[in-house]
Length: 221
Ligand code: FES
Image 1 (cartoon, rainbow, N blue to C red):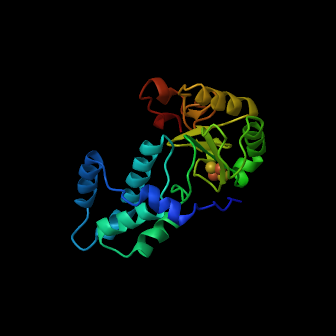
Image 2: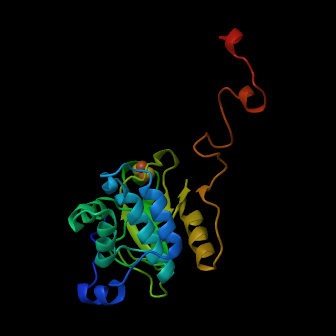
Image 3: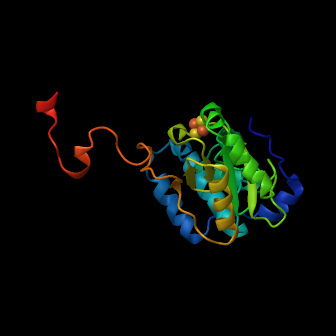
């Protein structure tokens, strides 16, 4: 199960984030986002605004970003709805962090398909690299969260790290990814085995002639 996060003290949070406002670049992005919705439907921009705000906090803190209360208040004001309307969105989706996280937010899927395919090995690799569920490593690099299904079950087990999915993991490939990130490298996202997205390992096993030519199978059926 996902762990409850520890939301920081509000006074401290207000002192740090009380004057949050869009950067000029994000101001322009926010205008573009709002323009997608009809007048009176500005609330529809909640998700996109929260994402933009979290990324701005992330850029400020060199982390994946999170949503302090004053930032959520700012977003609510921007779209002209009560704070609660935006807060309920922020608390519903696990893509939003309600507490500070590290530079890399390692979200390990522990739901049944991933669990059956080896998420325990993925978690063991994280543990052996010093990651603790619900906590950020002392160097501020990694935060480990166990999450529910991330919709990539065909490539189980998998983790999402910031904006990337790493799939078809083993203990060793998880260690390699964490080590590469710690060294400032950018490991290749997606399947970590010989597999194109969720196609069979080693290449297609049916309609193989379609891979290299537009083969017409109809006469053979
Ligand atoms: S169960 Fe892990 S991605 Fe769906």
